[in-house]
Image 1 (cartoon, rainbow, N blue to C red):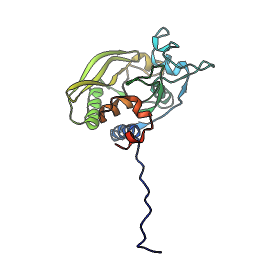
Image 2 (tube, rainbow, N blue to C red; image 1 turned 120 degrees about the horizontal axis):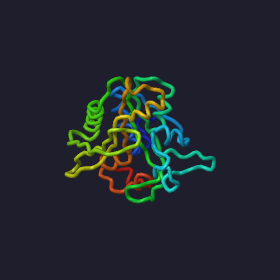
Image 3 (tube, rainbow, N blue to C red; image 1 turned 30 degrees about the horizontal axis):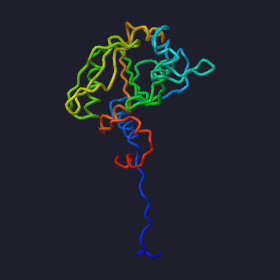
Amino acid sequence: VDVSAPALYRPLGRAHPLISTLDEIVTIFCGLGYQVVDGPEIETDHYNFSALNIPEDHPAREMQDTFYLPNGELLRTHTSPVQIRHLERHKPPVRVIAPGRVYRRDAVDATHSPIFHQVEVLAVDEELNFGHLRGTVIQFLQAFFGELPVRFRASYFPFTEPSAEVDVQWQGRWLEVMGCGMVDPAVLEGLGLDPERWSGFAAGMGVERACMVRHGIDDIRRLFSSDLRFLRQF
């Protein structure tokens, strides 16, 4: 072997910024004691809507918002069905995160894509309250974005009550990064859990949104373009 011979140059690959962002989010929540769970991307109406207290006349059920399959099933519009499936198989207390791809009939533009990634968080235990939710969300956001101001705004989601949207102050302006709330008692009752004993909180965020804010990316389409000139920056 000629040890003086020049070595072959093999360029090193890099993790895609979207995958790096997802891995970091998961790592932070695992450090907080959460377990990663997953589920099918093709779902039933029951798990995607009904079990989450989403009314029959809710706009999210419409054909223009959801991809329905010929057999009546659909492409999941969020990863919340994973949480329902997990609670059917595991009794509380539970602390889980559900990362994965989701699908919605959104027109493609700088901030929307029909395929994107979500991470949803669920905790169910005795005597959980909004203070536990707020503390968890702030701890995660400061671990991910740094010591930034965080604010909660009252909002509405069918499966949580009360509900809130969460903003961080990033580069001088407030940006919405998460939705969250206390699990609606009707959801717990549908799973056979006594809401007088058990309570829970849930939170969710778009991975693309977090990645774009973190890296100053102004167009979601760049994350799916496979443009090496762009990807080599990360």
